[in-house]
Length: 185
Image: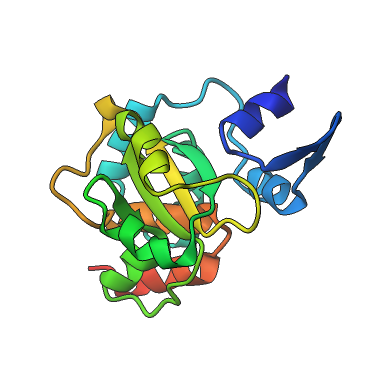
């Protein structure tokens, strides 16, 4: 049941082949790196509040923050046609995060697939249908679905740098997260 819950929440990736479930080893390692502390996890609203007020000083602070706020949004690794990826990033319902947000903020990071985006829970289903997003294959977009009541991206196109750093650490890209720390005001 725990494995099924982690798969449904997007914390680990798996594919079903008949009655056999094949779990992606890299996603298990990512989960191990950011395993939550014992006890009840923060609610999404508290996680977003913590992110809003966070001022990490070094990569260890960012890692600790990533562990604390790991339940801020459900993670969905999806695939869109490569020619449609630009339209996804321009969609008004989407907030760009990860390496693309870091590059927009002036960090010297490589903006490459998969791209990280946030969307409100109420907009997720329509976004998937409108852009013909699919599970399976090699994902080129990570859609993080945040609760509507915890949304802090009003009138923004890019996630704040602290959110981009946490997403980079969550995606096991410590090098890019370090670069964001270096250039962040």
